[in-house]
Length: 279
Image (tube, rainbow, N blue to C red; front, side):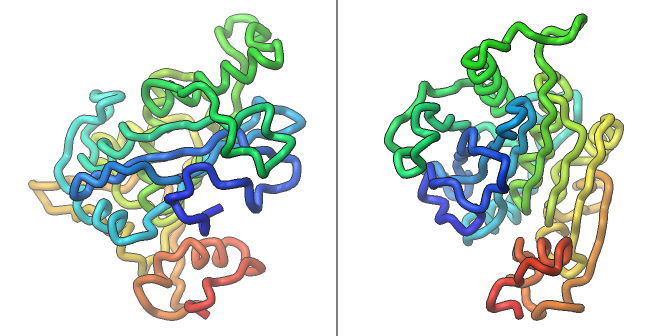
């Protein structure tokens, strides 16, 4: 669904794998130049056979404003959801605070064309809080909200988090928020073209979490080099674990192609096409 125009806040499901179903849309607002209009920025999907299994996918830098968001996120602030985890880019923290989870109306799931027509009660709180409210709502509808293992206060909720570019930093912040609130069981996070999200302290906090982290990076892409690291002034550092590649071996050499999600996906699976202007 990456190619959906992000001013369509509730696009119909597209290219979701068989056996999975759309749970919610993710909207957010950019901060640069006080651009606060919400944009479509991702989806939450669940496995039909086991609705407790979910994937959270957040899209990345696409337009000029989002590129400016990446470049302008220099000033560091404590991450407001968990200040003790370290300092993060002001822009990413600010955008994270605008993220909204918009549930797919249950009655409309059988008719994709009606998805945008039947709004559901708004979720509130942080991004992590909203995701938990959505999970509880669906568990209650299925009559399983109170069915969980002995010693646990909730059901197991296996959750994979994936994202591209700006979305990768937002995904990283969600993983850290969840490390405090423990509302989802996250075994894996996989990010593409991630900027540097926070400082050295934040990196150490994230890297100590008991999860598998794949940070896939094109060595020619400029976005993973942002925000800049300046000794003794800005101690931005990447979280683990880098898996680098060089797109010059198979795609055109320009900034757009270096950063394109299609370039990243083609490196992961060469049966997936490059963007037409990168061939």
